Structures are given as structure tokens and as C-alpha cells.
Image 1 (cartoon, rainbow, N blue to C red):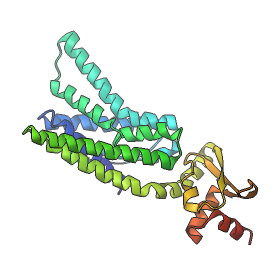
Image 2 (image 1 turned 90 degrees about the vertical axis):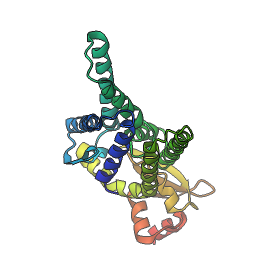
Image 3 (image 1 turned 45 degrees about the vertical axis):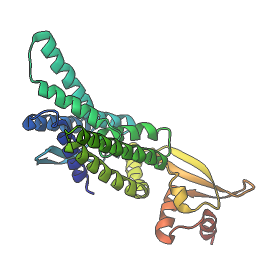
Image 4 (image 1 turned 90 degrees about the horizontal axis):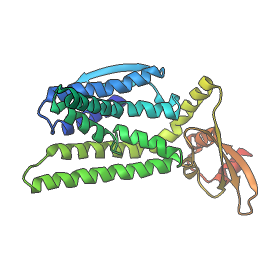
Length: 283
């Protein structure tokens, strides 16, 4: 699925849920635009280009450049920009109401609360899950981190589905909960399927980072020679250049395989054991 389509799903899911709290659809439309604008402005501040802006019935979606070129902390700020904007709007609106009796609309407060909570859910394709990806990615391998978040995302789907059933039980059916569950489930399935392709395609992004910053961190792992290439691929740290020391039962070094060699081997020969690949390298 194209990035702009996934962002469209995000906007649609977010707006349909928060607008169940308020009948002012136009007001919700405006706040979603401002939420997305916060992401755009922070990304632009870090030098990431905005490719296109798409206006549609649910708000605005942005096609932003490659965020992987940024450091983890900067990417974190980009993803936090929208929720932090909503939090700031809530604080300002409540302060104006309570301190100066300036009422700009309870609907705006409710919509921003809804956007803040919904976007921080650990579910694809919302802001929250991207934030948790960065945090968990610092301590876990990419594939393991994705597996955890995919499972949590499906858990959110289950929770929303149960809540929808409960609204039917109390005779106040909220179909926006069901719609949000369907959209999150769809995005999560897509994310689960593309994990391995991201690992294989990430070598290009690392090359760009190396050229831009003149360096890239390394990571080395010792692996058993009977393990196959696909399983070794799952050990790759997507933010570092990886090297694998191939060891036998006696802990003797049979060879060293670098990340680019691993990916090229999968492309050219398909899956095989490390033992087979090391022998093929030496032919």
C-alpha cells in the first residue's frame, strides 16, 4: 500500500472516532489538518522535504520524504509532533475557558482529547506505534520489535471490537469503533507482511546515511553455521551495518558474512544454510 493511502486510512480512522464525540464534522476536519500540519512543520525543520499534500473529505494527508535519514531522536520528535500539538491545544483551550471565561468550544477540547488518545494507541498506522517502534528498537532486534507491536496492534483491534459489541448490548451501537478496528486490522496485516522486505531494502537507506553523515555504526553477531540465511536476516539491526561471524560446534570461525553479502546471496541463490554459503564463497 502506498504511503499516502496509509495516511488516508489514519486520518479516516481518527476523524470517524473523534467525531462520534462531537457533531461538528467541519471542526473535526480543521483539527485533523492542524494535527497533520504539526508533523509536516517539524519534518521540514529537520530538512525533510514534503513531496505532496492531499486534501480529501477526512482532512489532509502528507507525503513526506524519507524519515529514516534522520536520527532516532529527530524521528521521534516528528511522530510526537501531532499528539503534542493536540495536548498543547487542550491545555490552551481549557486555560482560556477557566482563566478568562473565553469559550472557544467544548467540541474542540473533546476532539483534541480524542485525537491525542487515539493517535497514541500502539496500533498501525497511528503515530503511537511509530513512537513505540523507535523506543523498543533501541533494545530489541527489528524483527522482534515488529512482532511485539504487531501483536499489540491486533490486541487493540480486539479491544475495539469488544467495545463495539458492548455498545450494541446497551443499544447505543457505535459503528465508528468497528470501522476503526477494521482499518487498524488491515494496516496491521500489511505491516506484518512487509517486515522482511523492509529489512532487505534498508541497505539503500544505510548507504544514503553513510554518504550524508560520513559514518555508520557497526554491529557484529556470532551465529551457528547450520542456521539459514533468512533466519540470519531477521537478526539485522536496521540502523547499523551488520557483520556475522559464522561459528561451528567447536566455536571455530568458519567465515565472516557482511550484511550486503547476505542480502545479495538471498537474491541470487535463495535461502540456504550459512555453512553452504561459506563454502560457496570459497569456491
